[in-house]
Length: 124
Image 1 (tube, one colour):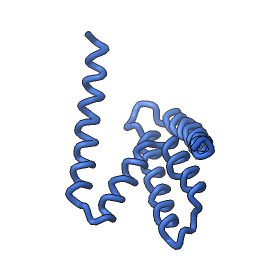
Image 2 (spheres, one colour):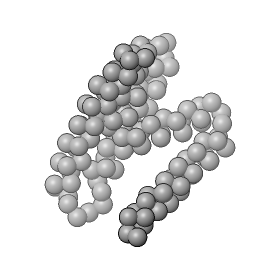
Image 3 (cartoon, one colour):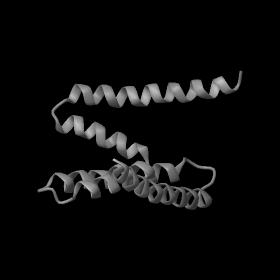
């Protein structure tokens, strides 16, 4: 358990640092527009986690430790949006379209509401 947590932590540290660099680099070039840095990180993270999902299911091309390092660690640190996409896709691949739709819709709607409420709670 400790070894696995350290593997995830290592991947997460690299993913988080890379997210920071990419977001700040893009934001410095386009400071007042759409949040391109976050958008780019989320889309790249989703593409990468999709590739990893495919490789992980094809004849076990990736070991469990590499899966932890790259999927839970790197992608989790790079963007939790990629984990969201992974879980939504997993439900679809398991032929659970209704659960996938509910998970996706609820995550977006409830997440936005929670962020709004959190903000409002700080304003008294």
